[in-house]
Length: 66
Length: 345
Image (cartoon, rainbow over all chains, first blue to last red):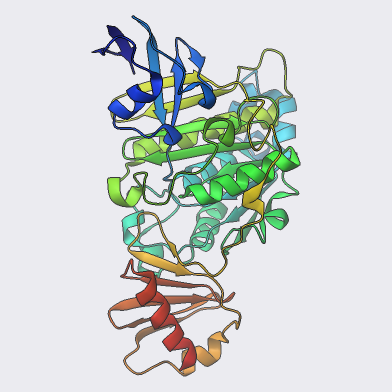
């Protein structure tokens, strides 16, 4: 199924969960904030959230420099 | 054109209607604490001093060095050559800009032991730090004291900004409950950083700061938003960030970072081939130290604020409060061994 991740279209296996997706993007769940269809996803929902066709996902990584 | 008096200094800023005379008066009475005056902190300090804030407290532990110059706007080659403490160099530049702001420099390491002294009297806290440990400490303190602060972070060509009004929108720990283990995120040291990214992030943070100081909160205020500004790709992303009622900090009011002092732990400085050692229990006498250097020590510099010399291909800078900066290594053990040797000489 198709998702829009950080503005780019990506193909993922149907039934992919958010946690799997974050891992597949090479990111660690504790270092990202995730928005799905313009709503911030609570950290406790990462495990249970199953993505659906055409979901728009924004993944923002914590930045430590300065 | 050249005919305007000091009274007109803020004319163009006051003409901006959302700020106005009332906003300028509020800005001129505000006190801010800026933690860190390197890359982000330099742009923040310059912007807020030019804006005419009442008092700006600036805290930074580092000294200026040549690799700072492409992005740290308050410093020049003379500062880098002499290794001036960043707050002193910042004060010099900011005083040249002039204006009504009272600037209070602190060449100190910022931690749980002095956070109350440095933050509690301020109306707003600005983030010019280069590490997450300090940001989690600031977040804990500001949430516990209901004090607004603005998180800003930058690395490579992009960075994040989050204005935090405790209880109104997300705090840092609503989004990222625990800091990642050290070394797991890219730093300015590993991934580099460019001034346009610094400028974009710090300017956005400074804009939020000016609005918060100038205008009381209203229903029309934009919702809390995490912004990602990418000055290399020319992109901006914004995520609305309502607070998490179950947040460990602003929800459950658990503030573990206020309890940690780690005062003996060496710190690797971001973007620097350098180790900082915190004050020892015995604060060295800088005069005595300068007169009794170990054999092989070269290039001694002694100022009111510090003693500096080269030894074993490393450069040691020892500050009045006993803190030491060891440049030329990232090995805390080597730095500690050399420092202990110097103190026992």
